[in-house]
Length: 138
Image (cartoon, rainbow, N blue to C red):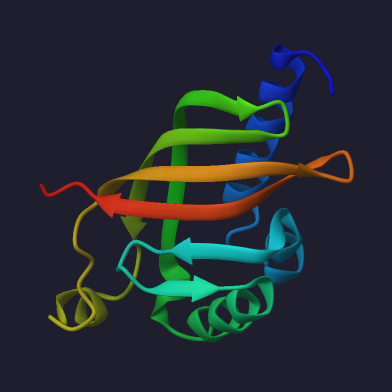
């Protein structure tokens, strides 16, 4: 393992890559472990990289493709040298057509949320094993 500072830099890069590739499943999915567990902004839970890939590809075929997220990392805490918890603020930009945004069944719960990642080091690379976003009520 490298120094905590070097590992933090590598973790920040994984988070940046996840943000950069949020609309590209071929780049986004490999950033996750095979058994990843994701709870998205709407509270939907997805288990496993294959299920995440399917869910992401379906979502990108809908107006959700126009919902863009940015993440500001607030804190990285190492549980062990190969496991860290990343806390960040997620900002959500809803660029969907007005009709999609105004549909009560499709409305986003907020424009921001607290994001918690659990990342693990596998084969010398950091991967996301868990992600949970909790909306911040406006």
